Amino acid sequence: MTDRRIDTAVQEDPIVAAFMDRLRTAPLDVLPRMPGADVLWLKARLIRQWDAQRKVRRPLDVMEPLELAAGVMAAGLLLAWSLPSAFDWIPRLIF
Amino acid sequence: MTVLTEHAFGEFYQRHSRAVWTYVYRVTNDAADADDIVQEAFLRLFQAEIEASDDEGLRRYVFRIAGNLVVDRWRRRVRDARETPAPVESDSVARDLDVVRIFSELKPRERALLWLAYVEGDTHAGIAESLRLARGSVKVLLSRARARLRDLLTARGVIERLEK
Image 1: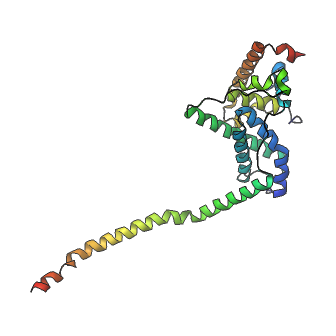
Image 2: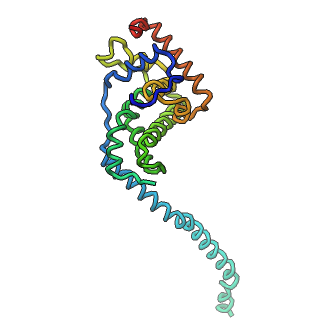
Image 3: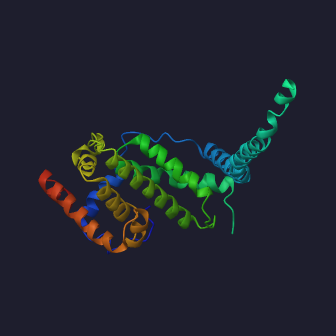
């Protein structure tokens, strides 16, 4: 924090600089409640794994609704094609 | 490119997480927000293609992500028409100058600009990147933030005490 190169053009007001220095050293009234590095590491690995799985699954997820639509369309065509001959047996029953 | 190992990440996290958290907390005035933002910023390190041995590069990256996440929260808050958090009560040690309270009276963006400039010693270009601002406007905004802080310090009569 303090060992970094200070950009004098950025910090041109000594009063503000003095104030910010006091603020920097002022103790915090609350403490961070963050997980440890090991927990974050695990979380990051899981996220990466899920992302990879999602990437692999993406073509399947895209194709699924298309397959369903194609199936419904095929069923509709089959029905339309077979409907005229569906009731052919009725006249045969009468005569 | 060297990949960040668990050990290297652990050390990096130990070294810098507190500084990032303090920055976010001082800007947002909300410890829970700071916890979330810092965690998210460090998690995004894994998606970044940065040389793992470049400690300064990693540090800048985390600060930039944290800054961007803070900006996203302000925008969401503005959109939700929620008020900015109320000025916080200052802690006992800093009470003599009331630095925390005075700082919290600034707008969040002013706080972020001043923190990055004075505490992190960032350049105009770095600040612009962190807060998603045009490089040219950082100078103007920083100057306004300084002027506003000076006004607050004058109004509270603490300028003389800071000059000592």
